Length: 427
Ligand code: CA
Image 1: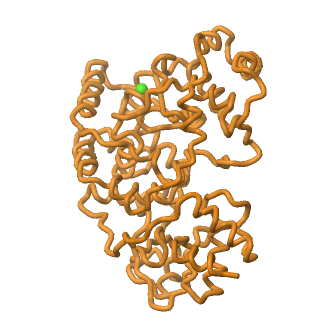
Image 2: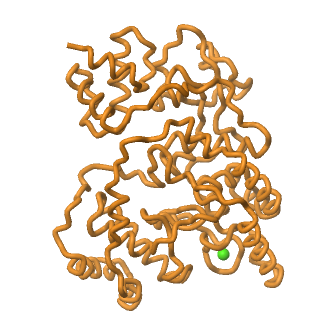
Image 3: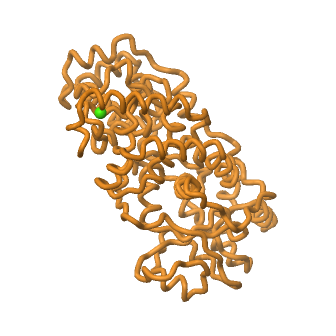
């Protein structure tokens, strides 16, 4: 790292430059949180044995119990009491945690927002402004600058919208009465460790309602394992330092299996009479094999590299082969719409990233109650979609494929109104 040897005055001007660029960049809604199934840097399930919506303890009883746990984990009593002074549960956090929206945006609408002209222009401008820093980050972590700036753009609109809730208050609320109290508790301990390290002051430790923090929207455990001080001021400041934020994102992607110089994926087109059941995230095949199966648009060379086939809107929409780098982006935020947006936005910065195939824009996505109904009806027909939860996961996709195969339809595992209609017509 070069920054620790940069004279203080120069460092100040770099930091000032970074702050200025945030003001100049146009405001745009951050979209990472709105990804279709946001699951941030966490392998923990959204719902599961951890679910405990009704608290058994009052907030102050819970706080006393948690205080012992935090102290046992090495948090000093002084820091704990300072961090919890005046902290009460945040009703807005509980409302957000329990919200199960009836309608979700289809992937093409999400991409329209994520890849807006304004966001592309801001990113291009920031790529120029931060060129030197980004070159150093690329050299150290092997992650390309376009991907890093795309993540910056979707996570926080390039640092402009980071969330202004107290991280300690949000996580304490979720640990007390959220849907995943154990997960929230581990994040809260990590947040207290960050405060104890002196990287950020309590009043500055702000983030989203779910505790995602700073320009990278790191959850506290990811911060503890992967945040870095890249501008050399001695603090890992992902809130106020663009250099720290971008390098921290690069470090996390590197640790998530990023392959230097490889694309995230590319659009392909499929032959007639294709077996759509091959479009399965669990299934990886070498590029040579995909080519042999008739896919067009697979780059020459790198024949042994593996990729999965992604059909974000089923067989009527675009098709992509996605690589290990796509999977690394999913480790950041486990939503294929998000990962696709990051890959395409990075290409848009360079004048590419257009999708050749059209989206089925006339299709109305299933609402939450329709997804539940779909799962119940698939279950009744013996296709085992798992417990109905309104989430189209691997089991539901498999069940949909089974029903599609029975109908003689393309087995793409994609739920739509037509399929629900056919299920309703079943005896
Ligand atoms: Ca720093």
